[in-house]
Length: 222
Figure 1 (tube, rainbow, N blue to C red):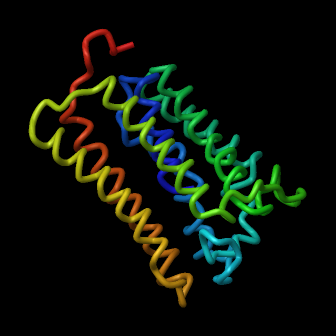
Figure 2 (tube, rainbow, N blue to C red):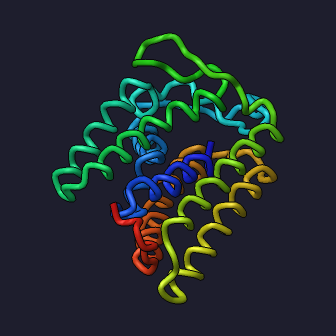
């Protein structure tokens, strides 16, 4: 799951409109932000295994600290409490908590059985990744719904709010489709882990930027 996680963040703006888009996106993507760091530290493990699923060549055989349901709940609570302490906005804290936990649910749907309930538990997964078209249909539909919800509650105040947002969305779709036609990574650390550490910094800063150039529609500031 890739743009499906972004969909949750965009859609959450409808239910917590006073929260900046950056933390709303960071929440459902948090597990994937933690994973490359833990991978580089040697605390979690993966390997390139072409054919592991039709959608991705990665064999994610050991990543309980970033992706098990229990740890998602713990990360969600820490993130939500930190946000509530700083922002004093309960709807935002709730959206963040649910966003973090949603990662496990969406990955359970898409992954083969490699998702754990807690470190050391049995592994689960419905395996949607074994169908390229099935995966793309579900993710793109979720993404479209998320974008529609975001647009329903915000409007561009200027060119940045319009074009930076539009380019951001287009880039996510381009990367999503282009990744299907790229070859399998040869060096997991250099080609997957390090880019995955750097990308969140760029994407969340970008999201914060254009979101602050968009205004809430009247009646949306709950």
